[in-house]
Image (cartoon, rainbow, N blue to C red; front, side, top):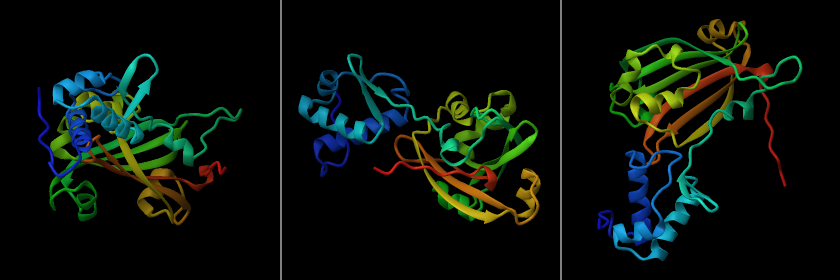
Length: 243
């Protein structure tokens, strides 16, 4: 039996919710795995089934857990790859959707600029990792990405060839660093491309680009990654269903 040790001023179900999120963030249960049954959790934490069910209901509503009929309750693994297609249309001549190729141009460690430190919740001048990446359709770059990570957490990335690890970064974060991105906040803006990103995107200076700024967090809400993705305005699309 493991009594809860959270803020005693909170309702018991909220204490259990907070404890479970911390356990998930610390990899007690991995994305895609089932958590113990509500009865087992009630025994482990000396709580009623009703209290456990309320905590689980909150985590399901928050998108941390998902119930699968007849199988149990599982840690939900978010699907971030679809984010690109919310905002950009990458298609072949026949209209088939294409996932752009990934190419890491550089990865380096440096003191965090103030905006990066603020976004990632780091002390000023803390060491961070910066990754510069382009996404290409054939030989044509269509996205330029600047990705910032806390060095202390993501040190193993500096010792591998990321281009040989596959096109998606989040599975690499999980496999090499034990860090799972659970959710992210995205902001969409537009700007005239500067000289540096104009060269990366092979665009004339002041061409319009769309900027997606993303702050990615773990299950406990701790910032893991801050990135800015700049894309050709000609590929931009925005679609929403209003009912």
